[in-house]
Amino acid sequence: MAKAALVVFARTEGREGMGRVANALVTAKEFKETGDEVTIVFDGAGTTWIGTLADASHRYHGAFEEVRDGVAGARSYCADRCGVTEQVEQAGIPLVDEYEQHPSTRRLIADGYQVVTF
Image (cartoon, rainbow, N blue to C red; front, side, top):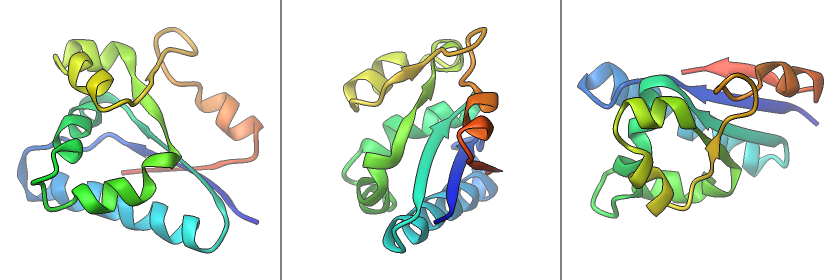
């Protein structure tokens, strides 16, 4: 069984950011459907996606809901700096602050996850 940790850094602005988050969601869905372990972390500007994806009118809301149970969280420091802490909390996504205000990439690797960034 494969183990993947998907880290979303993409901004919400522009087609490139939209494409990156869409690819992250589809990748998470593929891992989930095949019974592999997948976890998703929103980091940096990627934390701004939580509120957007939680909005039922967004085109990728359904894709987000399909993999929501795999979302480990959003980096607390970046959510604060991007002004989206309240949106993250309202969406029910944990704020992550494992190592010096970052999610622990080392822990993910030590736990056998391959880290893929979007």
